[in-house]
Length: 311
Ligand SMILES: [Zn+2]
Ligand SMILES: [Zn+2]
Image: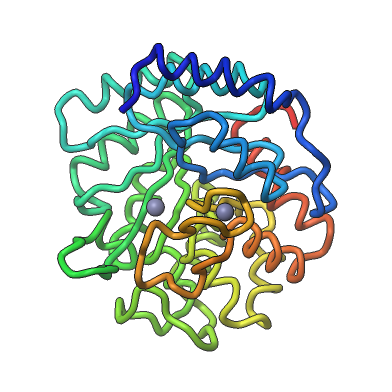
């Protein structure tokens, strides 16, 4: 951890070098918003990824005590960052901490990645709070370890999450990660983190996105990219069908927006994206698979509508 003073000094040093008020033009043919970008300690490292990948704006996923860093980054690059906040949902003060974050400007809860059940009491109170505060909640669903003893996260998605969508109709849910995306295929039974091959139509996620106006999907990470890449004949229809419900996100950890460094946090199960920038890969598959107007909604328009911010 660096101190607040060191951080602000780093910002001051970075500003003249970056000189960023407006992002450089990109190759994607539209402005791009990355919904799923984990805050990096150094301000310049955040901007290096956005600029390298051709991303105009990003939503910072943060933990408590990140407020100073968020404000400094917003001051360095005005208009380029929104932020969500997350906090251990098993702690008794979770509601208090997250309510305070929203008062300080957080525009959502996330990412919520905890070893609890998707329909358990810990997350249920967060679903209720998100509705009260009128902010979306971004959830990491995962049933299969990436490495021994990793554990599972927001478990029971395929079996129990529909009941949550029904029980909390005023909550805006954003689904993400392995179980959410593997369940685009109707034959999925938690065998692999990232299943391949043709998609069997009628999967849980496809159905829930169609049936519930309070469910949205975050296309980030290897999970989202894999679901979009495994069966091109499925992808085009899927994007067309849910064109108002999906958001581009990267969850990329590469250093430069071009695949430098480590792109998937050393996740051994996601080696298909090693050496690649997840943002670039997913923007590429979206651009190839969607019409220009649908692409623009997925990478820019939809999230501005959801967060009620000017595009
Ligand atoms: Zn995640
Ligand atoms: Zn990247």
